[in-house]
Length: 113
Length: 113
Image 1 (cartoon, each protein chain N blue to C red):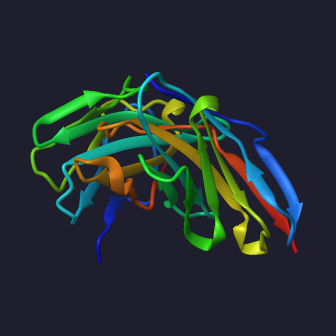
Image 2: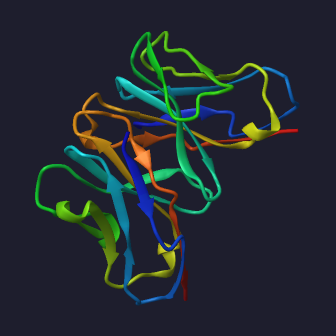
Image 3: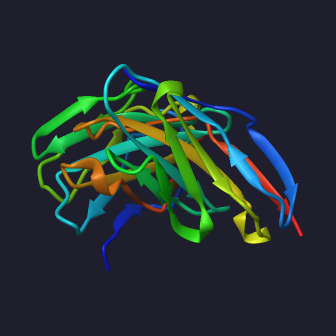
């Protein structure tokens, strides 16, 4: 089944403790992206990657890092999480040509206390 | 960069009523346009998309959207809603040939049986 898999689905952590949210897709998509969803703000793009070893900042990159060493994986790293990073995170992928739209993962609900 | 505006963030209506959600975008060039739906507790799913074709686009579950270039609008419609249409709806836009999707803040739609 074609899908984007995120792990974990739920995570509660403490301020300052480094964490990684994994994202993997099995559709051989070139493009991958991370979004955060907050009530009343919709989805905002954190980082995106056009292909392996090619990443760039989205609209709200502060406090996040990403890497794209393999085509299928695009982990999101929070080096020192803070409470304002409590949010619902979605990973998405698409073919290089956007015509098909994104395929989204099931989301990761992160709480930083 | 492109941006998207959605109005009437909270909509409550009865089953069999008609639904129309407004979406306006700002971008000077050619665009691809999308509507996504997020059912409670789930990830985003593509409802329909527009790119360089008939301005009236038909999607899944009886939804359709009309692209009016002169108004920079891509409004979503459904003639007769069902309780199962209770969800949040997001409009999104990407410049033609570019994968960077910008989302609106969403419309929370509640359908009362």
